[in-house]
Length: 357
Image 1: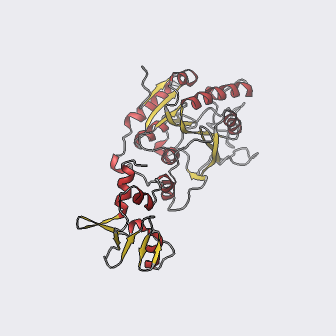
Image 2: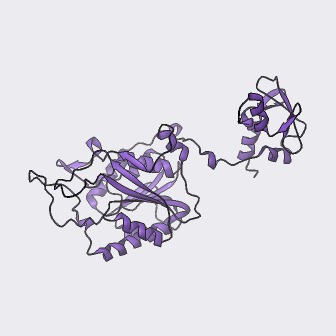
Image 3: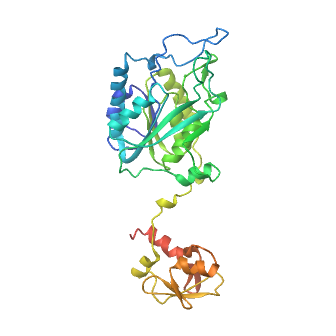
């Protein structure tokens, strides 16, 4: 029996993906070869060498060869994803449009393309093109009907209470985070932890299972471990795998007390006050009162409440009393339980926890 939890392996993803059970992962993050087709060495104006992506793993015989490779691993990832799972694919202009084409042909449902704008990109030394200052990510659900995870409120909080846009300005991997050997970059396309932090925070929940079929030096596994997610990574290159293993072993999970995120309002079950009346959880005729016990209202048989000569919902009557356009009646009205004033919202929360709907 294979173990696919909190583990990374050295192997070919085209072979290893076939061993993973269907519908077993919540998220796939994939950073596949870009097929950049660099045919000659790149140099700076001073004739020094540019360490671009010229690795053997990025070489393919043709576009047809690359397409077969891409369709194979994407098909396996779709099989492995749970029905409500989603996938992230990152690439450059060399390959991202081909990957998007294959994603759609395999019936993934495209949700967003995200531009990762690098605030410290490598310049274009020859001066023959624009500086490549971004990479593109495609986020897609398994199918059109998937109820995928999107932690909207957490992303908004991360962005100073503004909606998170689809253009992200983040630095490339550098400094102490960048792995080097003998003064040279160990991996030519190592991704920064900040990028994976945002992706994992946005589209998974604590305990979710994350797969990375092109693990590289282990960034996905490291961030998954820190954020309390379960990870499984595959890396073909032995030196990258060894570096990833060392990074993952050193990574420490953030304490559970600090892993909670803001719950999305849309993910909360909607419970009408009238449902509590219908089910007999609170009775018609019960007196509701404000926090200061100065205002009283009576619950009617249809779930409305009556205050003096005015009838309406718990929210409408609370708003009228407070002189506001709208007001949350759940956190305004109280009822008497054995001599103790209790918010009616307590009834709603108990109702949700008991899974009575």
